[in-house]
Image (cartoon, rainbow, N blue to C red; front, side, top):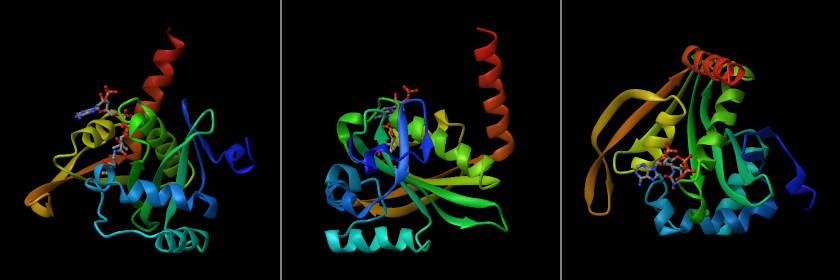
Length: 193
Ligand SMILES: CC(C)(COP(=O)(O)OP(=O)(O)OC[C@H]1O[C@@H](n2cnc3c(N)ncnc32)[C@H](O)[C@@H]1OP(=O)(O)O)[C@@H](O)C(=O)NCCC(=O)NCCS
């Protein structure tokens, strides 16, 4: 394991989240250009390594919000997750995520990383409401957010054009109060086992 792989910023039950490095740029470029992945993302233009490198540099300057690389416990890089549009007056932010290694989809890695990020957002950054915008056809993403405690927060009807059709954008959100209650319930049920 090299030094980058051993860096830990947040620890989930099966994932580690660490800062993104320039050495991650080739992987990020592979993931974000993959048609099976980008159909769920806002980006729909080709992304070069130069463009990805600039994004990584903007994170280092503190201009691009917070984004972290998700790895497995054995150090395999599998995706990216972040907090954007952080507003410390309103106490809000938006989460974005991409598991680029498709063989890891649907195995609990995304929701594990998301819970670690939510704990950081609420219990370290003292944010109040974390939002997520998901295309209505992205049922896996809606399911994983709900699993983490997100609830409906509105719909933008026929808002985006993808694969030749207009689609709704589902807005989901989780409030700090609800997050803390969920954490407490999980701790109580672990203790009573
Ligand atoms: C969305 C994403 C981050 C979720 O991460 P993940 O590791 O795949 O999600 P998890 O395995 O933690 O949870 C997925 C849940 O959806 C369910 N699920 C899996 N495939 C599904 C599908 N096609 N439709 C509905 N639900 C599905 C799973 O059963 C699981 O719920 P369960 O654990 O209660 O059974 C990841 O799949 C991804 O990056 N996808 C491509 C890019 C993307 O969609 N990004 C998000 C943009 S808003």
